[in-house]
Image 1 (spheres, rainbow, N blue to C red):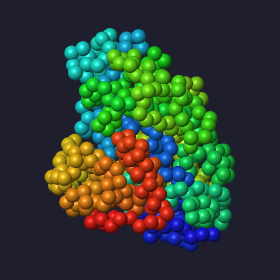
Image 2 (cartoon, rainbow, N blue to C red):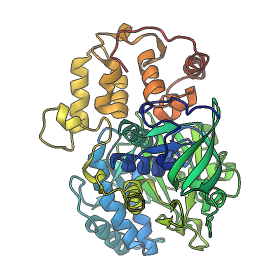
Image 3 (tube, rainbow, N blue to C red):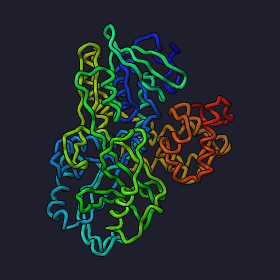
Length: 530
């Protein structure tokens, strides 16, 4: 067998000949969250992801940290309360990649009464403590600026608060924190044969440099849409099969002064979000379609695109069609099968099951991004005891990498304007940097931006400009510290630069990664060390 490959931060942790405490299968938000929590408790953790981090479900969300207003209609009060509580925890942990967002809900009296909406939003406001987010209020859509591009029949509505998140970067920052606490993170490494032997798990791993074997005292199955298969391969007595639901989104150019997001009610009683996405675009989604294809290759259908466009045109005075879509993406959500006939009504809650007959096997079923940290904490609590680990939960008040904005600003604690103040300070330090680039890198990296910007006095200090606003120093950081191995990894997951670049510019970024893969040396620059 080959030796365990060296890859990314944390590469100096336990080697192949030394048993791991935990092997985590799955590099989505749940797997990386669990790896982070366990590593922070002092356990030796190895995470294996068959593709890139957040390559599938965890980068295909609606980019929201939210309680799930519509779940109240299905009487999932406990789930909504749990998610609202976690919303506050997460917003404080990483203010660079997530923050408050205001939503407007036009009232359609044929679908839900004014009283129903008002009561639901009052409950949403009060199910959990809100630190910074303002409460809901009624909106006159014909008098206020928010309604300027709506069709005239929409007269009244409500405004309420939730949060946005860069979902793929959330996953990467959890992996980075795990690695910096001693975990090993292997991407593009598939788990093959699994078997219990002599009180441990033996796993065959297949990576870019060949196959190798690892031994771990316990196994965590956080494989998302593949969790049923992994449980079956591990010989679980009663392996579940998650219910796979495809959700698709489209991205279009902005119209009008869209400073807030929208929650649109549809005649089928589903909802569609319209969300500001970067400086120039809007994200529209999501659909809910039962899916039985390859979880790695979902594609938006023509019917889904038409559905989302029709939902928007029902409210806004414009024409919108497939020709206006500049990007689309689909993901497969592995939901708990509660035997609901309506895909939209399938619970977004999760279940954690521990099989301790021999070497422990912990299976994770379901979940959503907003509750990932709590899921990871509960999973770690259950597993740590069986491994003799007495260290308790720690992530509720911990910052993710780059999230210490208030400390750099010289403040005693986090505040609602930390990101804006950090961006201004970054501009003062690097006056040469264009505003669009400054905003992008502040939001993506937070205080970690200094690790590749350093004291750069101008763009020449960052190496070649591979694409507009994308310099070699940033790509090197993404490759050496954030496990980016291809142009796609960087353009669509480590960043969303792909939206703003031309095909030729995107190809230039991909070509840079191809050169690194062939072992050709990167140009030397005078930025900070990685």
